[in-house]
Amino acid sequence: MKIARSLLVLVLAFSIFSISPAFAAEKTIDQYYMYDVDYDHEAYNQLERFLYTDILSGYEETEVYEEDGEIYEYTSIFVKPGNTITRAQFTKILVNAMNLTSGELNKSFPDVKATDWHYDYVQIATSNGIIIGKPDGTFKPNEKITRAQMASMIYRAFEPTVDFSAPVKTFTDVTTNNSAYEAIVKAAGVGIIKGIKNEFKPNNPAKRSQAVLMIDRALHLELGTAVDESQVTQVVDRNITEEFLLTEQQDLEGLKTLYRETTMGYYLAFSLDNLAFQEDSEEMEGTVTAKQVGEHTSTVVSLNKRFAEVKVDNLKVHVAMSAPDMSFEMTVDMSGTAYLKKTEDGTWKIYNIVYDEDYEDAFTAAMEEE
Image (tube, rainbow, N blue to C red; front, side, top):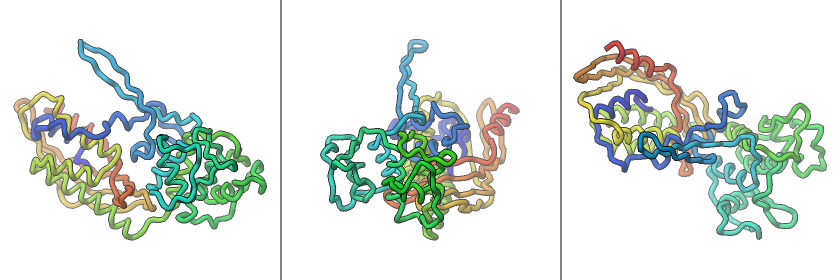
């Protein structure tokens, strides 16, 4: 867990570390902010989770502008939740979400070439029995995927790991003659599909947000294990304790390694971007120290096969800053919730942390008092 956003910025600003460009993140923090999704959007949390964990990349747009004779670039990420989604795009998201790898391939498609960007994703999904293809033997990767086709792929993908034995839910516009009937009614029975009143509208082109919602619901129906529970708390505890230790030792290499081994996606970019902050900061004289007070506890709140939430309580931190023109001491409560995802290699990593309190206001108030 990060010691604190404001605290780390203060540490860097007062030159405890000397940062080099080598520590900039592979992806910058700007690449994890959705600029076209409001907080009240029905799929906001799911879209953010997929973006933060690199399941979804979004569309990157860079604006170049000049100010005071300097040229700047500003990156915006557009998720476009209301847009339709192609069969290839949906396949990529599904493969990424499930950390799928290629199995034995016994089928190929003439309209999916090795030079296509989606080739590997289609091969992986096909080898895992998720893709069947069209009656004419093609896949039609650029065709808009329908809600029925999406339901079928999700059902085939999650049938080995999700219990679909709940009573089915039927829709007035999905008959037994529909090739996706079983997938639709069983997926609806466990809550993966919600429908619109009594209709599913199976032939309608699916929206990007609908794809994310359905996959996310399925992911959260997969069961975790006792081993997973132990691993997620170990990762969170390691991130907390080693970050304090390495910060005190001024071990920048150690911090970089820690972040790469315990964080991913948004939180990795955030962590490494903070380390690179010094590049653009004026050197200032002073010291900042942060020490944990007492012991914290980490408790698993929710856990499934690929996602977990860990509540961290009693994480008290004593912060002291001394500089020529200001100084202060304060103890802040850094308790909060860590969100983790299992990666392709089977390790758990933190992709976001939400704190219980707005400690940034406390830091600001303390500095203003001085």
